[in-house]
Every structure is written in C-alpha cells, then in structure tokens.
Length: 238
Image (tube, rainbow, N blue to C red):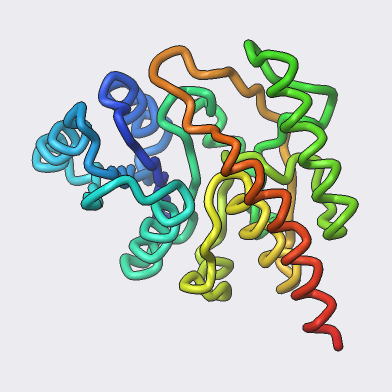
C-alpha cells in the first residue's frame, strides 16, 4: 500500500485542527497527517503533540517562530522524503480545501506526477470570497501563465499532491518563496523538469474560522517571482 502524507501548516489554527485531522485521516487508512506549527500562541502545537502520542498517524514538526508557508512546506517535504512516503499533499487547515477530495487526487495521480486542485477549470469554483480577492487570485494565474508559460489554469492554488520523485528531483534548499509565489515556483520547477502536471476541479470555500494569512507582501513577492522564474528559464536555455 502506498504511503500518503498530508502536510498542514498551522499558526493559531487550534479550532480548525481539532476538526481537520480526523476529517483527513478518515479518507484513507494509508494517510498520515503532518502538522507543521509555527509556535502558535493558541497552543495548536501542544494539542497536536498530545494527539500524536495517542495516534501514530499524526505527526508534528514544531518551529520556534512564524517562518512562513513556504518554509513550512519545505520542512514537510523533507520529512516525507526522509520517511519514504509515496505521495505528499499540501493542504490548508481551515477547510477551504475539502478533505473529501483527497481520494480524487489519489485517483488522478495514477497517471500524473503532480495533481493541482484547480478553482478555475470548469468555470470559477470559489465560494464566499470578496470580488477583489477573487479577481486578484484569478488574474494572478493568468499573469503567471503569460509570463512563465506554465500551462495551468490555477497557478496559485495550495491544494496539491506530489509524487515523492518530484520532491526528490527539486532542490528544496533553493526554494525561498512563500505564499502565492511558493505555489507558483514549485509547480514551475516540476514542469521544467518534465513531470506530468494534471489539474482537477475543486470547490474552494473561504475559511469560516481563524484569520487569513494573505498580505500585500505575499502579493508583491508573487509578482516578482514570475519574472525571476522566466529569467532563470531563459538563462538555463542559454
């Protein structure tokens, strides 16, 4: 049986974590959950640490301070490689990514190397976002596609599944971005290495509990990152 790891970064997500962990684990008995917690003041890490002692399918990486989404996933990817997992998910803690979609990803990755949960194929599938946020996200993907040539409809989405070979092939220590730009960079590097990328439709529901981590800094970083990726690609061909 293939080993599956679902990585969920957290910062002050105690209320959500209490619900998301069992919701993920019940999808498939091959799944483990890894929480990467950035020293949450609400004691998310303490809760998960206790849970991990009771359930070996729950794993925890505790970090000293808030270090960002991208570095949290990189820590999780390295853990997955070191512990011989076969498939690795990125997933939010706040139920904006529906755990019931996990098995659809695992089915789709049978003939792919990276599966992206897309909000923008088969129409726009986003609920409860303000129009400004929706337009920002949608046109960020359009912008990324134009500048980099990355052939995906939803370049900034954070619900993903990787074959472990993809993570082994990418130099994870050279990934420095966070937020939107992290998602773009990981997919772009997989694409440039020739891995098969597949998008499947998901419905994205804005968080009900907790506070969004989106910021202007994250948006600016993404705008700059796509040009860096294009430039590196050109230099690589030269």
